[in-house]
Length: 215
Image (cartoon, rainbow, N blue to C red; front, side, top):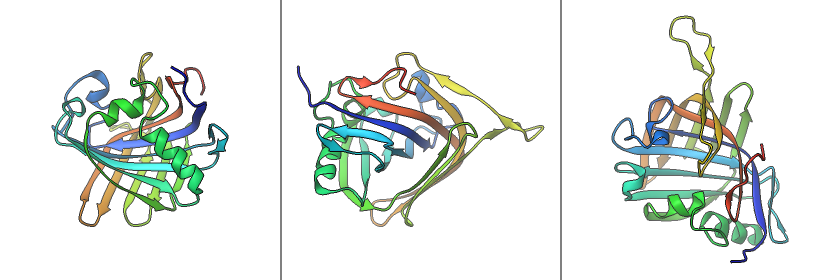
């Protein structure tokens, strides 16, 4: 099947309620029985057909009552308020799983969602230093994520760890960090977790899913 030519590439950071490493990445049960978290992706380079997407940021908060694959999830997307109407339409199609294989990250996660709240259009403050394993993003008072290196409990020195998933559908390799996150969306969500799973990686997606070796 022929799809619209599109791609989005750039640093992505995420944090969830699981312990460091996240057992979900190894087909295990979530550390606390449920999954709640946030993510943000800076599109350093991207397009959807002739529509450029360079420089835009997209983010989301999400939660599942149990393991992700068991479904029942809820999600709300946040779209960079700088996006033009044409860019918003393009991002909706990408994030909504259109013009791509059913095995892409967007469609796999989308199949586990029971409810999608109306998206929010806001300024998203984003920072990421992959080498230092630090990252953060803010959406006003609604969402925040801060990632720093995991610390050795004896020496206090940064402890470097990675997850490598050669056949992963979200990333092939990610740096691990220690995340503090908070979500406070009036009437919809209010949760937070400290010193939990954090991940930083170069995300590159297209109609067939991950663009391998794009980092």
